[in-house]
Image 1 (cartoon, rainbow, N blue to C red):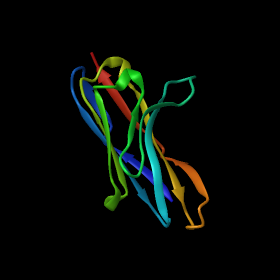
Image 2: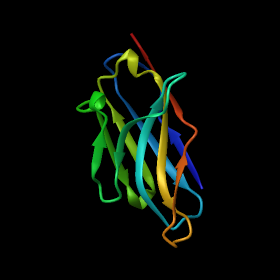
Image 3: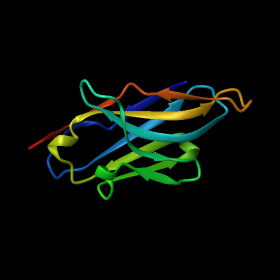
Image 4: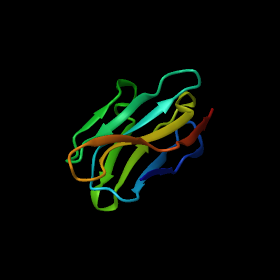
Length: 120
């Protein structure tokens, strides 16, 4: 199983990016997925999460600017990032809870991250 992020890059302040994360490989089902960031020397922190049935949760700092969504048919989760600020510059990671076997045991998987750089 792999979680593969894409969509990061360089953007000017005030601009937008759309991150994507697709889950590939063999698995039974995908549960809650989310986007996280990790500044150098800090812990990984939540940006937003979304359950399989679409219930979302956001960090306070991203409410109103970022939107998480998912397409269960495509095993993909998205993060629409608007009104980007230079302080949003960091690596964004996709994470998800997967049941690999169908026996009800879930494990958390991480992608390798995608760099977002916002210039002033």
